[in-house]
Length: 191
DNA sequence: CGAATGATATACT
DNA sequence: GTATATCATTCGA
Image 1 (cartoon, rainbow, N blue to C red):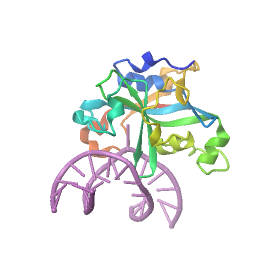
Image 2 (cartoon, rainbow, N blue to C red):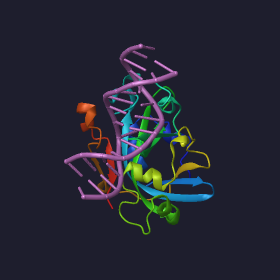
Image 3 (cartoon, chains in turn blue, cyan, brown):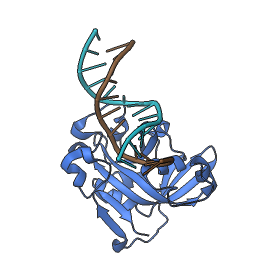
Image 4 (spheres, rainbow, N blue to C red):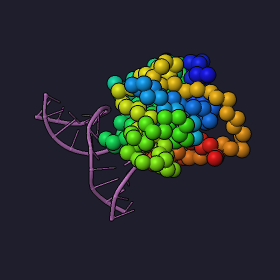
């Protein structure tokens, strides 16, 4: 089943990040459906988090989707090359989000391989936020897309996750965020 | 290890 | 309006 909007409206963005592990991220663009099990996430706790674009209530045209009501996508082009896919959570005016960093391919493998210019599946297909978004066909013009609609959504397939399979750790690639970079907001699913 | 690459934020004229 | 620094990264040596 598709996760209801209420899933995204809970207050604890870190908990949502943890809950997203094992859920299935689905996209449907141009009739091509691709699905993948989420294996790595990072929480971005809004105004209190230097690593977030919305730190200090910095509100711009780009970050606007994060200030909207939870349950939509926030897609951002990083380093001019990579599309990063985030899930916006919490109430309106609260810029919390969860970055999806990695996943495991399920359906639509051919389309993912084509988008990534690969002949066969390998362990880099969905490794890293930029690669993941590219494989699923997510583009910056999908920012603001509802996650309860028909283009991008997340399903709960009742995959059982044991607590021992989840590991938390410091986030990566956000060294500029100073001490906030060390916060254990990164979650991985052990395979 | 280092270059690529472009939208965006910010500081100017 | 124009200029420039910066970036939640990846890929190829």
